[in-house]
Image (cartoon, rainbow over all chains, first blue to last red; front, side, top):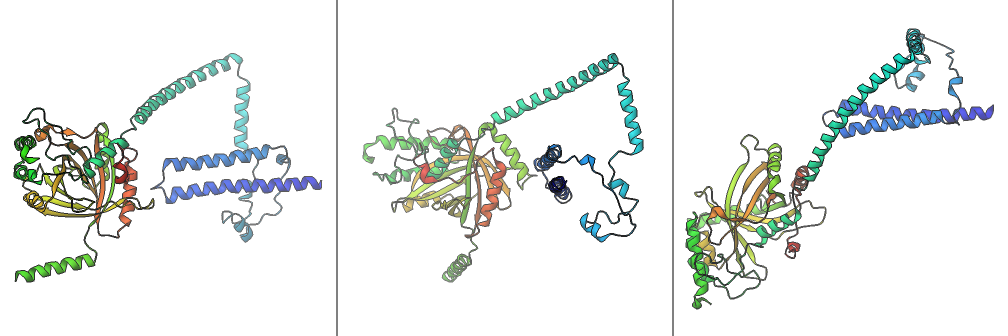
Length: 260
Length: 218
């Protein structure tokens, strides 16, 4: 007998703990709903539901555990009802229940549905039991048909959504680090923008770019002079035509030996 | 009289430097986006940025980068002119070395000084002994978000005697830059930039890029 009581006590403690967990998570969700409804995201909100369902699962596992004493064999007996405020009760219930009165107790200690509800349930169960086999079969088929229909609609929608998401994830590659490097190096250091000198095959507009090869650091015999005749042309190079003139000059300077 | 004036200008400049109100630090993040996705990015930026009503500002510039070979480390000076607004002044810009900092620093920080000039700046620089290192055409869109500036631009190679309209793009992507000019020591803005860059992911990966490493990347 003693052993059983101990078991009951530990089981009750564990259950109370779980119920408290559940209560806390519900409370925190309500807090979020009330205070953070502007910034609340769906994923975090759904996380809360997942948390609660987790708590519920552990709770029901605990109740169905073999070590848990059969709680339904136990009765809770209200010994004293009083219409006065009960400070201790208020403290225990976080100010939710003020009095342990005849008014509230039946609601809080109820273990069965209300008589009207119970009668209705019985009526339903009776009706279900009295149904003939064929009629039941017929209804089941109809029900299955409806469910299959809905299922098809849902899976079709899901398929569409997934292909769309797949297409989007396929297009997720919207940038390439290589291109970033190319562009940044070009703008920052002129990589790929400095012309590589090739001896012009034909003189004329096919000539190379303005800037002669020299990279910073190589410091080859540069022709600062070649820039100079160039610059006025550049300055005037607001339109497109002058750029051709510019390269003409350039190409020419490369051909003429006196510049070397 | 003139001398006097000059000295007062100098004085106010010195005092401005001392009180640290000159925005000479550029905080910078860079990335790129494929041509095919640029519309999506522009759309998103339109939603995120301040100039919602007017839409993005477009620009079409020509930039020439001059170098002065006085020391081992060449000093780069950038001259920019607007091709779409030719009457606008030209711009001369000095950009210092990139400071990457450690991982805790969200952006590149570098010295940056801008000044408006006339078109004779090229002649002036050439006379100084600067040489044009490279040049390119840049065309794109500019957005504002508070103090942040976001540019989405296409870089074109110049030259080959072709007219400006038929220049060759550098790559199949747009360059995306997020920058703020601020007086030194205002590191808080870098955090804002990081969170803004976060909002553009995964469309664009805005990062701080190490130029020294880029030199070795093919």
